[in-house]
Amino acid sequence: MRINRNNTRDIKQVMANYRYINMQKTLLISLTIFFIISGFKMKVHFRQIKKIVETENVSDLEKQIENGFNINATFRGNLTILHYAIMERKFDFVKVLIEKGADINDQTNDLWTPLYLATSSTWRNDSIAEYLINKGANIEIGAKYGFTPIFNTVSYSNEPNYYIFKLLIDSGANIDISCPKCCNQTLFIRCCYWGTTDMINLLLEKGIDINQVDCKGRNGLTLAIMEGNNNIVEYLLEEGINKNQVDNRGYKPLDYAKNSGRKEIIQMIEK
Image (cartoon, rainbow, N blue to C red; front, side, top):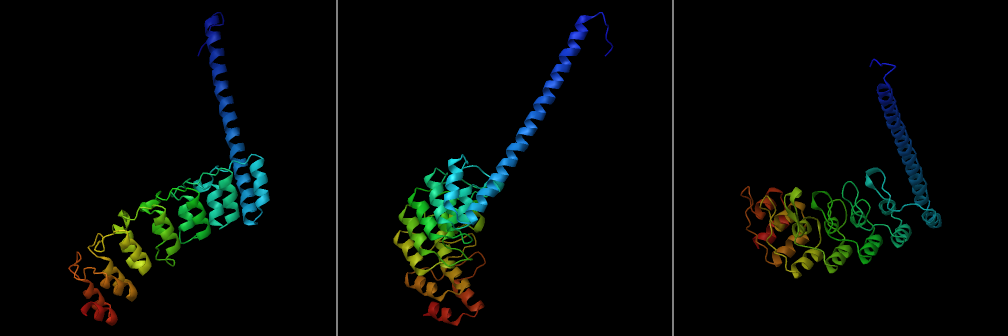
């Protein structure tokens, strides 16, 4: 802009613009420095706490909390220190964190709650799970695909967990549920597939329909046959499950038994 030196209005405008630009730059620099420093402190702090958890030094954790560590601060993946303590199966740390006010229902980016982690096949710990349930953890918060903690107690990758399964049911867990992303597999059908007769019996006692089917029209008997679980097949037949259920492909449970050469199961069905 060409300035007329005799025009004070132009000079004032230029100075005002200059001050505004410099103010913006100063603010941007200040914010950048603040976020860099804050982020750096958060990462260092978490590494310190992580080291304490891994070395099982509960007293050091308590000191960190007394010194102002935010126990509900989130880190990579939206993990809190409570999530991390559960993943490390450190019951003493979990108790301290809950007693000091850690959010018992906080969720990670994958929607995992502390209870979900404690009941999962990867980080299963019955003592921690029971403690969280007794401390009032929400037993109905689901992770991705609608999995609630009770689904975790019946997993293809781990032994069925009847103790926590029953504890969750006794605590009021919804048992009439299904997983939309898993072919609408209900909790009952999941138990027929990977569970135990005790689990199935408990669900039937609670009034669950024995003839539930998944999105492919398969009932619990068909899935038990596919898994080769003779005990569950025998139990379901004794309880009166429909052994003539036709699935979406036109197959009956007996067809699956014959196709897989399961002679003992064939005899049970044809009896």
